[in-house]
Image (tube, rainbow, N blue to C red):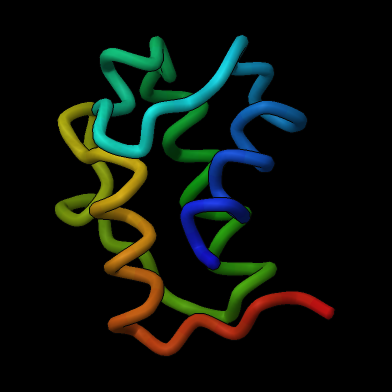
Length: 78
């Protein structure tokens, strides 16, 4: 559920091209540090869950971020 949400967000808002492999890091997906900061703020606002900088880095994978969202009880938008 969160993997699909994140891949859609990365494709549409952050313009990551092609099919996103959830096991690839943000560095491998060529998501820069500014986009990661924006993504963190976006997730905090939209899903009402805190994302610490230590939990979201260039080395973090989409799957790891999805698991973090689930662990923190993120609320998916309607």
